[in-house]
Image 1 (cartoon, rainbow, N blue to C red):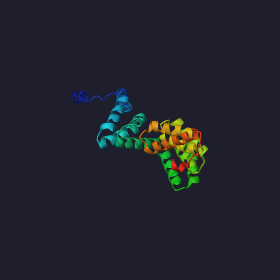
Image 2 (tube, one colour):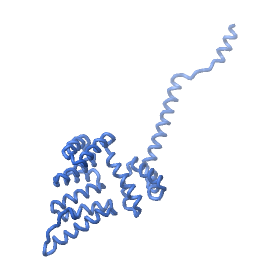
Image 3 (spheres, helix red, strand yellow):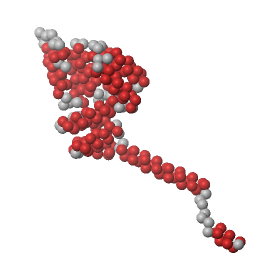
Image 4 (spheres, rainbow, N blue to C red):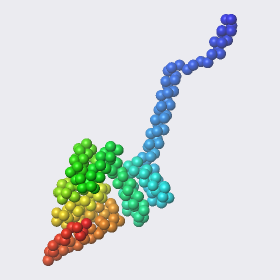
Length: 244
């Protein structure tokens, strides 16, 4: 009996100690975290961003769409801005849509939802409602450039051009590539009779969005007005509705 118990004892599986299990758990956790950080690091690396940019420029339609989405995800705005300058209309349009999605979603899902509601109110000419919503949004998310830009648009529709310009300027401090803010400020400057400044703003918009035909045409007409102002005859500035 004693011998049988001894044999049984010797054949028992020896369980690892608690400290041994804990050490291996920590090691595996560290390995897992390292792998995750490595993957995330790759996605945010310049190599990945350049790869996605090449896909955006020369890939298939599906590859271009995925590349644009990836560039938005890793906040690689400079690559999307670069694509706006290409001699490829479809790629430019995709990059423009991706950029505007990135700008609208920059402050998170809740902010984007509130901004969408404010924009819808403005489109339906419920301007006071839109302003109240945008005021709250800006108060809560003061670095949300698109909220400033959309409030500038509402101010412009209400004829409050000085306030619109101030909001455009704030949007551009937060996002210097915001061609919409440059365009909006140009329109307001023109309404205030500041033709030279209107030209400057439109030129800045075209530095980011060089192939935009409405902005090109608006600049051409503004420059024509500026030449008239500088001529000996002067010449009255024509209504802005015929320019923008």
